[in-house]
Length: 470
Image 1 (cartoon, rainbow, N blue to C red):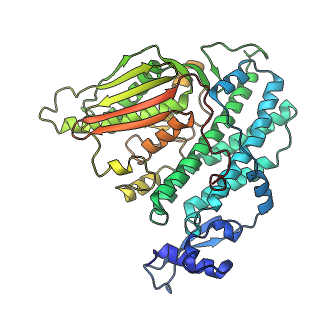
Image 2 (cartoon, rainbow, N blue to C red):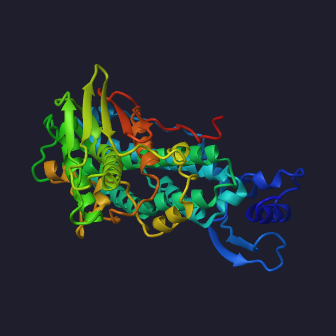
Image 3 (spheres, helix red, strand yellow):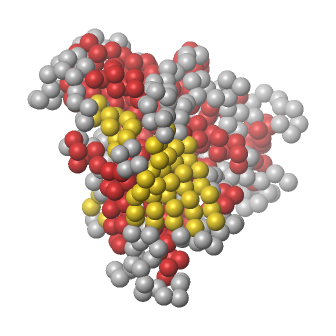
């Protein structure tokens, strides 16, 4: 027997769309109804003979399909860190205007692809209230940016920047809403398909934030009192959001201190926190978006520190010092590899199969409850709070400038959302890197983060609507 939600969606489809072949209605994509509904509410259906009689009621909003089709037909144009650096190194008014027009056309193209992906989801999934809210946010942003005319002056650019900032703030709700929607829809689609959708949409979200925040940062630099148009920026500085010489040891030390402070805040005052040692090629450096690297390293260290604390508290001598966490840096010709090794007992066997999944795994209800307490999420290390203050990013310490979203979202340090590892892998793979974990059950975990050293790899994103490109 079909689940209740599928049964109801099937009944709705039979009433609202063209006749379907028997057994296919429940998986008919939402686009069969022109566009998916954008408002949902849960009601009690007393006449429903299946399950509890709970179902979603929807109100559909008509929109011109042809406009979206025109933008879906366009391909996104990925960029590399090196391109971002070279373009912004000698910043002039003409280059700033050129950057504005790239963002003006690229944002609606990338958003349109993800809207089409959502339209291809089964109807019962896309009408989930959380996913429906994300759809509405995306369509509003698409409709706004597609109408912006060519940027020709600095005043035009200022108006564009205001719209970009507004979109970035509005979309802080996207990650928790998507995560809750995916969890609630587990069982209505294969887990692998849900995870593929989530990975695609999150990677695209990162890509939009990169080009949007890069342009905002270049605009801020151009209007800074100290800036001289055309002057080359120093190698030690940021070019927009790109840190030209990101020294791995410095980032890890900064994250280690932040995570140790978090551990002391989240545990008892007398809790012994493990030392974090850094060995290997201590001068290894590479260009990178610093907030991405801080998030990945922060999540890996956070998991290791908490695992070591919990295992040590159960040991024969909990008053002794816990075993240290060792971070090894390895610099090769084209890559930098960061290995984080702990003695926290490894990953439980029942959790291991769901390590990289957004929608499956134990404690689903607890994860939903925790996500409900995080209405806004930028997925940065800085949004974690210690002693009623947000953590400070290394970017802020070095340049006096921080991400435009760093102060807009907060979450308590002991609230586990169950998505740190899969989201860290999305960040790692975005710039053609990788993240792998090897667990030795009963002993500990080795995490391997590989980063492209040269910055010449394009952002890894679907250049077209993922399901139209098959």
